[in-house]
Image (spheres, rainbow, N blue to C red):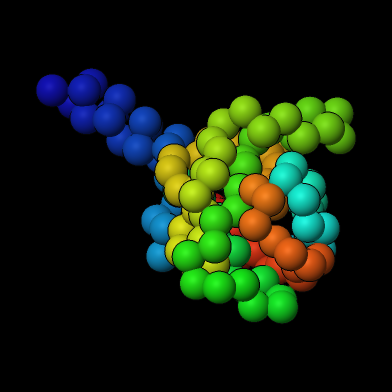
Length: 135
């Protein structure tokens, strides 16, 4: 019995020492800005996000200026950053709208990237603000 308790306590200490999973309420937020030119497939970014602990990630575009009509769709992509190159290979939301979480889910430590793109609905260059909440 004492041996099992010792193993459990050792594992608990190791999990705590490694940082464990971060509660989303303790996430940090990175803010990125840029400009997307009008035209289907034109991208803003990529922006690199370095994750050091496991937890949850949320990507939200909080503003487009000049303001687009409510419900205007655009693309938000999330992927891995490898050797300075962004590979949008984890999540893509083609129905992103301003103010709503475009990407969300579990995340492990690593180097990632986020992008925003026009789906062909922008009529002028759009300045954006994107917030990435992560552990």
